[in-house]
Amino acid sequence: MRKIIIISIILLLFLSCKKKPKTIPEITSALNDKKLYEIKDNNKNFKLLKSNSNLILLNSNGEIFKFNIDKNIFDSLYKINTKIDSKIFNQNNKIIFNELNSNIYMIFDLNKNKIIKTIKNIKIDNLIEIDKEYLIFLREKELVFYNLKKNKIIKKLNTKGEIFYNSKYNDNSVLLLSSKKFYIFNKKNNNLKTLKLKDRASSGFLLEGDCIYYGSEKRELIKFKYKKNKIKWKLKLSKVLTIEPKKIGKYIIVTPEDNNIYFFNKNGNLYWWEKFDSTRLKSPIIMKKNVCVFLMPAYSPNLKFYDFKNKNIITYKLNYIIKSNPIYLNNSIYILVCEEKNKEISILKIGNKYNVDIKITPEFLKPLGKSIKFDLQPNNLIEPELKINILDKSKNKVFEKLIKNRESLSFVWIPDKPGTYTVVIKVNSKNQKKFEVEQNFNVVDLDKILREYLFKLQKGCKLDLINNGVKKNN
Image 1 (cartoon, rainbow, N blue to C red):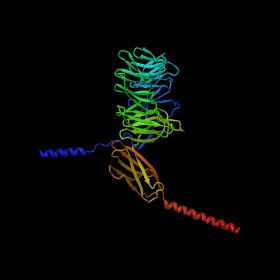
Image 2: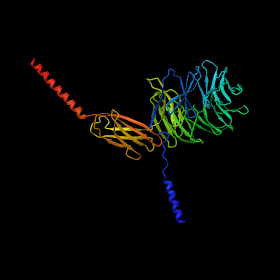
Image 3: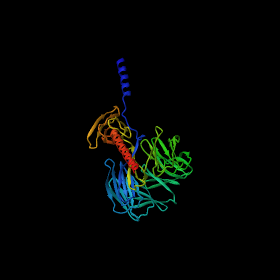
Image 4: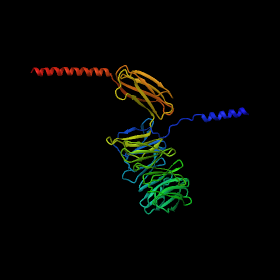
């Protein structure tokens, strides 16, 4: 019995000491941005969308492309062969195009890569919702429910000019919020239930279970249990909330017009808040473990990443002009940008830096026959293996070294010839497989340079003496 207890204790100690697999945080202080693709096209009117785990690019010529992130190429999906309006609606893996200067609408299914429906001669002012069965839109002062299968309008409602914010699906119903009312459209029986709001809405809503969260014109954040038509709680804010609340983990995020970000729990208690450095440019982007906010100025904006679990903030400067809404995909943010001088549009990826920084000492002059030190700093790599080669101008290998996990990340090399060299590092790690980094540097023969300089100096002095002697004789 005693042996069993001892063995059990040893086993528990072993399991508790067992190392957990290393992971890299979603966002670290080592960030970078990378141009994935430069769009060399005279057509500057592009839209960037997300469908499932893909980036979708559209242009005003009605061309739809899927961007292959791994290969940095575009795959053509479809070409409509007609000019389209710049106002494009994207929801539930469907895109709705409006043919330019007409009342013809085309519904493109991104899952099937084809146009599944064309609707003609229907005036639409503002699209609100689409699924397999219904298209919901505003027309003048009417809320219209159009049945796609039956090709006809099945319900209309006079809204008297209400402002509509957003809509969501829940339990075979479509939920819609306007400035004055909350609507519940039951798709099974085509029944529309209307709930009048006690406090006029100022933002779209966040759906969470049988409750919604939204901002009111009275500077409040409201939690509303719509199935019971009951307000759960109200929180007074310093400024009006104009964009819909977001959710990350168990927290509700609001960014009112006071240039602050607030994290509330579902009971309305404040968990964390922070101040922005400047005005918010875009609606917050919800990542897995961070909230990203783009801040002014529009050119060269600041990005702030809020790690809500650790209450940590990482700031990153972006040196581009923003040309689209940012999209979060696979732990990175993608956005269309252009430079101030170069107006070409590019797809930019923003996220963790996965590479090796190379610091070479001495920084400037690297003399022949003297030690040159190389300090390597891996960024966000798990157990990296570094195969190092130094190549001369003719690509001949003059030095090689292999550094494995836990070995020193510094080494010294003494050159025996001057010239231009390249240090090439082949990297392989558990989380980033087989890539290369390289850096050029020059080695100079200081003794030779000094001898040549002294020779020129002496030669110059002799010429001056000769010239002065000629002048005296004259």
